[in-house]
Length: 315
Image 1 (tube, rainbow, N blue to C red):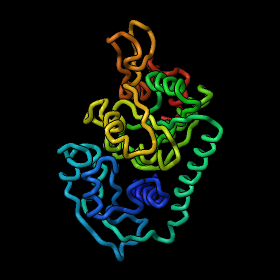
Image 2: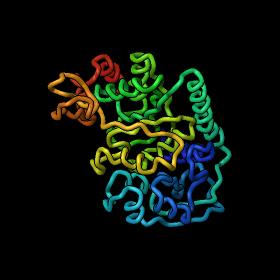
Image 3: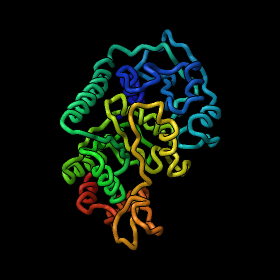
Image 4: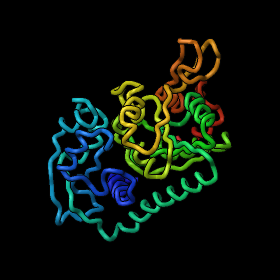
């Protein structure tokens, strides 16, 4: 996927009704509303010069990077990965653009992805009494799997609904995620894998609310928000996203399901949800550490060996 494709995907998602508070690229006045209301999610704006769009009648505006960073990412660090990604084409943005006709077919492909997802969610809800959706952006380790089992105790079915699209350096590729989650689908009979084409913003708690809204508009009634959801570079505290979902729960029809994440308990000699056993000494299972083991093709003790051997083929 080319870098600019993200904006074609965003345009299709906007037109499909995936986002509650916007159905087109934002203008400056609406952007100010997003600044003051975290539950509205992450604003989707269009930078200049993206090849899919006709700018002949466009209106332009400038976003002040520092103000945006403080309001959306809650940091003054302009070198934060979320800022680097959002402003990689500069800080001048446009509204009142048109999709070029020669890209309409590709636009329809991404639009059909949302329509297909909605149909599949509706079908799953008919066939299962109670389903929960979950986003996952890493190849799963045993910390993830204990969360899967935690959810499956409460629900008839778990839908792994990862976001596919442009990611930051060192994130797992879409292919690796797909192969990993298809393996999980076979391993657990009540897990389904349904990917979603969209954007990563690394906006932590605000993006958790953004994701909550997206899953609501796909037709889900429940969405899991776990430890450090959509965060990066240790900018946010592990439970901030969960706390944000509780604070703004009245703004959503969908219900957030929370936990403090999966850990290894040395005394229990097992993987547990934090707070699920009486012991305080728990080992955090690091996704970063897992990635480094995979790159070296060294088996990581806190992940399924068969899964790791599958992943090796696609690194």
